[in-house]
Image (cartoon, rainbow, N blue to C red; front, side, top):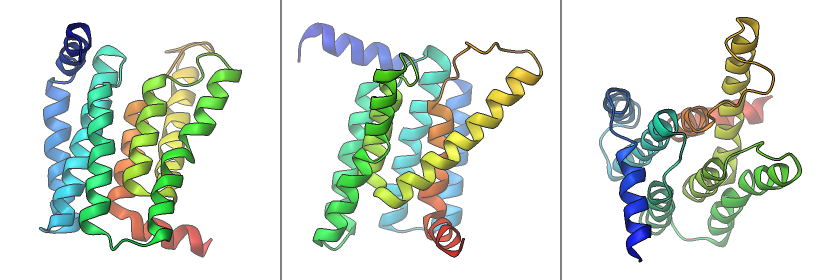
Length: 194
């Protein structure tokens, strides 16, 4: 790693700490252990949620999603798969599909509509998809995009932004992915029931 790359990582990490980060990190930890109990799986879920909070806060504070945090999510996804899940081809494929099912369409849309999605948002969805698998990734992306749509409507109605304004998407994606990580079984049941 070159000196420029390491200084970029350090600069990116400096964009995370803020009162918002500490508040939401505490909320994420509380929610994880309240919903999932205390187990090895809940520790992985807590780490995943903390990394999502870091991505969201960095996007709010500096407009970036740090590459080092995205890499940490991807590594956590691989370790989670190797440690907690019984290895099956179906499970392995589910996680690989999770890495591309949202990120690749986002990338293609960004190539067609310049600036539709930021590169950090695309990388975040790829890494989170590797952690969650395709079903929960779809559910999390749907929730995040749905909430961001309502936020966009709010901004337009109350004239806080124009039609060309950009919304920082990582906080919304992180919210949706957190809901999917915490309530995945319930979400899948609800989606299948519809």
